[in-house]
Image (cartoon, rainbow, N blue to C red; front, side, top):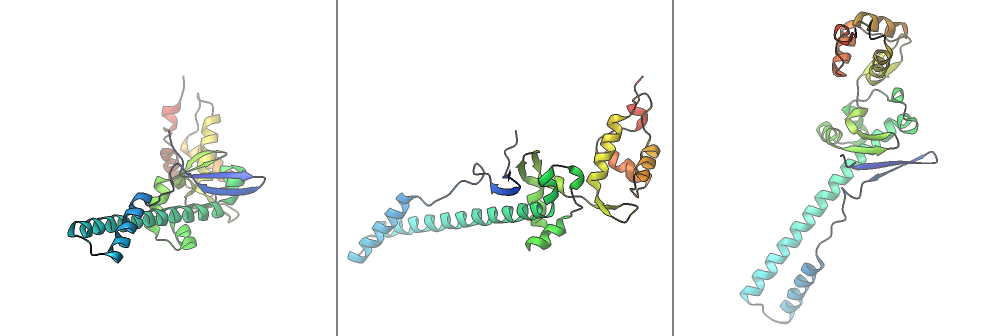
Length: 218
């Protein structure tokens, strides 16, 4: 079971993005530690502290500073995650509005890195490990990244679009006479996609679909 890191809600045509509170708890420094540190500080103003008291005060101070550092690191991490997801949302706005996989635009890590000002490796870590809950299902962010492919009209489309068409074609084929890679290539070219047979075979393999001879049903 996947607990999404982001929740995306369509409110009458307006997309609302938020961090999942289950993965982003509100962290605070213990009030007890704050009061203990304040008590030692007040006592130090009135009288000289014993060695034991000074050590206790220093211990509490270090723990509070460590907690502040940790809370700040978590806050920065959440900001990085949100900034990355928001950029993906803007880039793939049409998909998130419609749920149509064919609307996913070609997008590489560098596109989001340039939009956010983050390092490519940082974007990669977020994309590979985080999930977003949408009205079309819970998706891993890396699903929205793909290379581009040109159509006969010169339009750049996502390779995800081509893979979706391949899935649909193979899903609807006559299993007694499954479509060969050559035939799949021919049909895609007829649809206007400039694609080579070896590329079709590569995409088929990436989709974990066996070649035609192994898909044949008696």
